[in-house]
Amino acid sequence: QNQIGISQQVPWPEKLRARAAIACQEVLIARAEAESIEREVAEAVRLAYYEVWFAQRGTDILLENQELVDSLLRASEARYRAGGSQQDVLNAEIERERLQQQMLELASNRAAAEAELAAYLQQSQSFSLKTADSLMLENLPQQLDALVTLAEQCNPELRGLGYQIQRDLQRQRLANLQRYSDFQLGTQYNFLTRDNSLAQSATGNDNISFSIGMTLPVYGDKIRGGINEAIASRAATAQMRQSEQLTIAGKLRRLLSEIDALDQQRSLYNDRIVPRAQQALDIALSEYAVGKTSFVQLTDNYAELLEYRM
Image 1 (tube, rainbow, N blue to C red):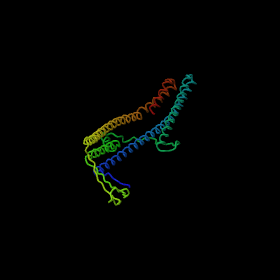
Image 2: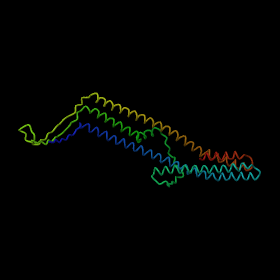
Image 3: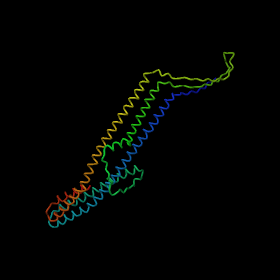
Image 4: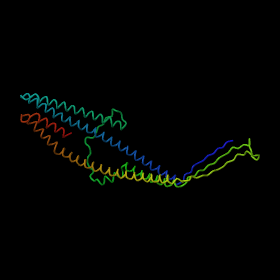
């Protein structure tokens, strides 16, 4: 009347262990990818913070220069009353308006950076930040070899590629295990009846049967193709990891060079250029008051000082 059967394929035990090892490596790969994304977000937050810091510090510098512009304007007005050119007064007013324009640009940049930070931190768009007065730039890295070693230990991309190599090893192992047969176990239950039976000895009693089978790995070319594919995938991943190591070393070398150059430039501005530009402006301002220099030279000195300070 009816027949019910169930069956289960039972792989070779080593195949199950190889697949489990592959799954474990893929979990580690996914964790490395998640960590890489976390570091990208952290970098974006740092950059947005520095944009806010620069906007705030730049605004402070512009406010300090507001006093200089006012002194330029007073000097030009005094010179005009003494018979000088009205154009000097107009140029001084233009410098003041230009200063206001720069402050508006910095305010816009700060608002954009704070909005970006609010998005990263899941804060409301009214989010506002007060940064530190100065950035801690001490203990700058100097040794490239130590940084390369550290990067190889903690870089998530390199770790992920290392996990991929281990995964490819397990895939190669699994491809080799395809030479072994899998098993098929089953059981059937038959509901029998004597109705319309051709055999007079039929009893109509139900019966149960069991079956066992196995696959025959006779397609050698297919198995060898899978093995060669796994070997090639492992070699490609190893080359990708080596390429990533070289790329990271090159980036670190470039960044260290930039850090050294910028640090020397920062010291040069703080210790020599800005003080001398301030001194030149003071001299030009005093000479302009007695008619020994032009207003154009005075504004040039002012513009240079502002540029160097920024």
